[in-house]
Image 1: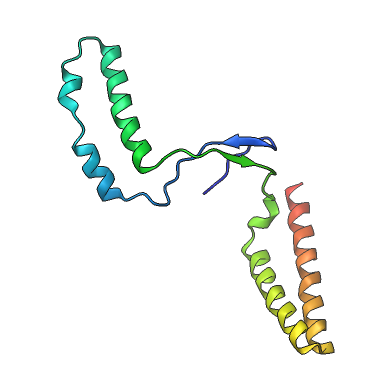
Image 2: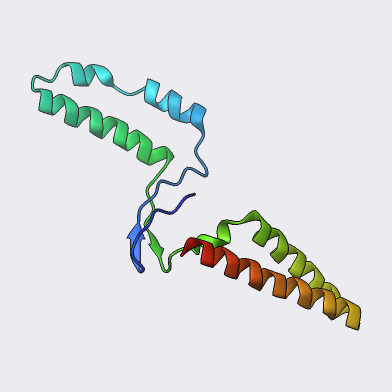
Length: 127
């Protein structure tokens, strides 16, 4: 899910589409009592009725959930290179703690320092 640009400590309200079953949603929409809408006289009443029917249907299948954004996502962390280096760092860190050899700790430090330099380059590229 992509988080829009918002102020810190602001809430966003996305739909929870994780458990959405498209077939059930389509079947539920097909069973909506639309003839009730055709009997309404005013265009405003028709629009309100359609909004209510479809809104309730959507709410049943993909409800809204308030989420608090506590901090802005770091723009430079979108790099695949940084993520791969972080995974390698974690692997080497576990290995260094298990083996406790100078070579394993040196490899861990090299990758850790490489992450720092790549983050700095990415950050300077954004500024």
